[in-house]
Length: 369
Ligand SMILES: *Cc1c(COP(=O)(O)O)cnc(C)c1O
Image (cartoon, rainbow, N blue to C red; front, side, top):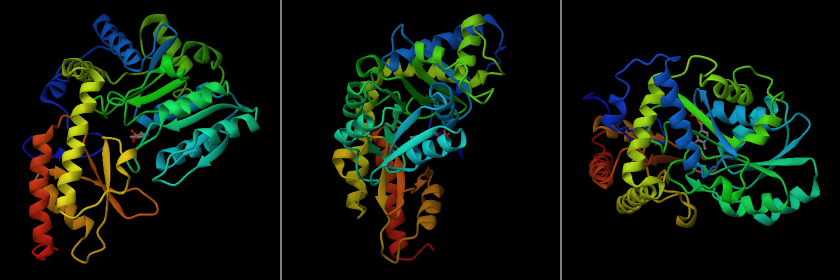
């Protein structure tokens, strides 16, 4: 435990002792206690998504990408096209998935520091009646950018098409309302803003679309409709569930409730983010994004061109002081990332900034290289 660093990453991230303690128990996957635990978690996730009786949460064993692939494979029929809104690596990953599962897509790509124009979404949907679906990333973790979900959802709804949302790095903190925005599906995972441990992903989706998607998936394990059918029949997952991960997520959802729900969590992350960007600016680091599009999830900082700076040295020195940061992922700009989500509060950010101050001073004096 003593060596476990503070994870300033987009997940897996720093969890509470209570969440980790929830895993100190063995659950039988077919035991009524586990079936009840699992069903309770899915109901709570549906409510966090703003779903109602028309929606269902289908869990999957695996990381977040498993849910993204299952969502596209199950809900998009062969022959239909998807309008993919891309402004980072996670949007591009959906394009890769579509190619591999043979779903036709049209890519609407903008720069990694920009957002999509809802009017252009409307224009493209109206120009091609085969575009039955659109798909977008809520918070593009590549940069930390918040895409305008409400505006895009309004455009897709007005065009009478279905919107699929990758809300992996925002779910549990960023506002999302499936019913109000008429979303077809939202995919997320246990180990980001929900502050659980990794191993479970899920898709909250419209029951009617799931029903219509029964024959779509070309994979046995990544078939959301079959997983939902199994769960509805006897409450059991089709294949071995990550029991400890589900138990940890139940504890994490209790903590989310006690904190005051997603709005209170977003406020804490917002304060973490403000302190971090202010403190890093004092150390001479600028952000890659305009503050107007920055989500309080993960911040991309521009790598200084100065000769004293080297990311690996910076990383190692911070890691030696107990903090793990994250490499950058933007295409056009050298960046590194620092996450503000997880069981961390402003005093942790202050402690990090003090460590970073010491590291920068040492690097400039070339005491470490
Ligand atoms: C984390 C993340 C994913 C899923 O990544 P995994 O490594 O498969 O968990 C997908 N989309 C976004 C936007 C993410 O931040």
